[in-house]
Length: 366
Image (cartoon, rainbow, N blue to C red; front, side, top):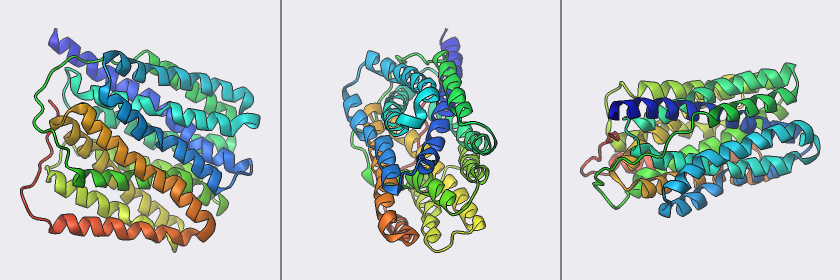
């Protein structure tokens, strides 16, 4: 019976993550580009990034005290609501695009929070990695596909695709697990969670600065989608390969993640396509290290609600800085503002590398 539950948990977790992410990444890729085409500036697009990220620490705080019912609703209801938003956009996107985009950005947050809290309660093992691969594959494929659809077809196809993906996700809603486990630590080590702030910063930059900047620089939708897809491929490959490589410890993952994200600062002065591709490949590797290994660590040895709170709070704050914060500064200063990303990431890597003490190893949830 336990083996049957474990097999079903694994299947549902992966497919629910896959279909929800397919729908959400379709919308999140399209929103900045559509708004840019409708005449909105970087500050408004930054507001969209704020709407995407601000709910995360708020929801994570609310879920510190969540029960099974709240977790179940958090996994199911965002899928239903986003399916409704997607089908509605087919008819009203030209008039109410900004409103629906902000609404969608807010509605998606509870799904990630509730799913991550539920990971370590399921009978199956390696759930953080399965969840990450489930959303990592669409992160690689969807931008490429949607970029060429925007280039050669109708925008309505994107919304119809997102609607279908969300509907499919409803059929694979994972159960709320009841597995009990021993919590080994109560105090979360914040220093390792800072790497998640940089991961959020890069993600906010990618979708809400890089996308529209490439468009205003003359790149086609197809090229933009391919670049974002390359980032996703880099992330997905890293998520998968991390299951088979030697564990370098939590400090090692944190340092390496920051170093890989740091080169985004060079885009402030070098905006050629080969530089952009290099930066997104390295950034994809850096983000995946933070979002897979640190998540696995936090939910593995700390109370899951507290671990997810720290995970999503640091990532959410980074996303706000990388989208709304940088977008506002970008509007005034231009691309050179991106150089500011280089200094804190390198400083963090140096400080963490030079700190001595017992290494905290990454422990997979069992």
